[in-house]
Length: 204
Image (cartoon, rainbow, N blue to C red; front, side, top):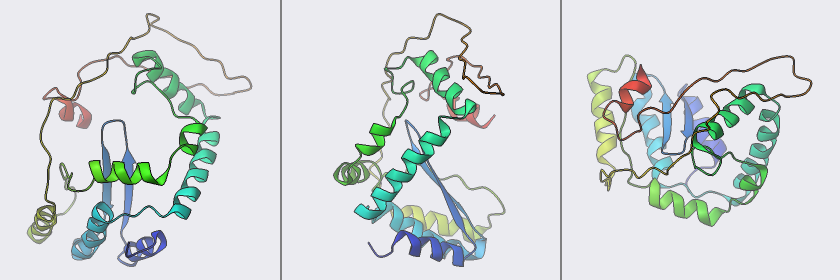
């Protein structure tokens, strides 16, 4: 509520910092890149992103339009298409892990739903922090102080995964007319995120 998206971007840019965000089926993450000496200042903005986002309607409309355009571009890429077909083959199109987004999904997003989801899943829901790079004792103390700001309500629970039906076909081919390149995807279902080695496998 205190800053526009541009003001937030300019503030982080002032410190030579930048962020990446990622949202997946099971979790979301924010990655901050900055120097140790600017960590405290940058974490102030990150904390407000986690606790005081207000989803301006105009910004949401622009983001939705950009996402639809990006989807149209991606749907011309073999790597994007083969990933979509691959997950559908492994999990089934009706499974959350195997379904794929379309233009209408973006267009059906509304601000009220976002606010509700944000309140239920982000505010005081910080689960873990990973530190990488030349972090010193002062930086670690600042991050610990950052964590203590959250009145966490995280409770560990067993995740109930939807059932899935892997395709009986072990090899599938999809042809994209006019394409001069190929993309290959290889894999199989193994452990899920309830397994104690799940994080280790991600980092291996």
